Amino acid sequence: MTAQELLDGIRAGREQLESIWAGLDEAQMARRPGPQSDWSVKDLIAHLTYWEQFTVDAVESSLSDGEPVPDPDTDAVNEQVLEANRNRSLSDIRVDFERSRREFEALVAKLSDEELNAMPRFKWEYEETLGELLASESYRHYAEHMSDLRAYVQQF
Image (tube, rainbow, N blue to C red; front, side, top):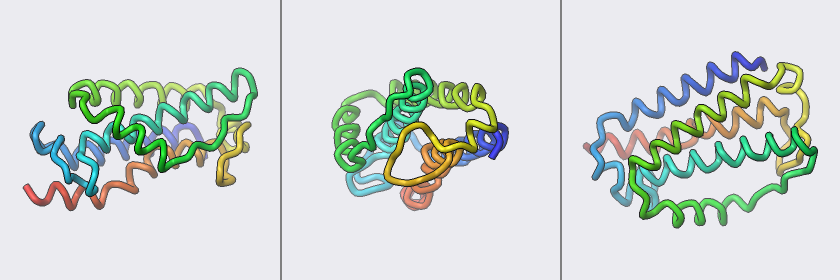
């Protein structure tokens, strides 16, 4: 995987994801149940943002000090993210989502193709190259949620 391939995947995935919710108004974005029984579209955006930022921070940390980053308890973190963002405005969550994209892309842009195709300096529950990990926490993660999101949007 090259940095350009990864960046292209991130950009295409974001564009596709955002195009799905593009026609929703603020109330539809915040409505529960939404794409999932306990998540609104707003919650989904906060969820995606959290995992992108967690990944950026973990990779940056491992590159700077070489310390391993523990594999998080995904279900517990997802619940914490939901609660932490429940009362935040859609506008603030979207600002964070855009900031996260810029930071994620900046991280990818500074990594060499050699680094992307090497094993990360930390171990999570699966064995994959750094590039595969970054793809999993960006455009592949978006893809995991797209069918539920499409089904929700089709109601309107």
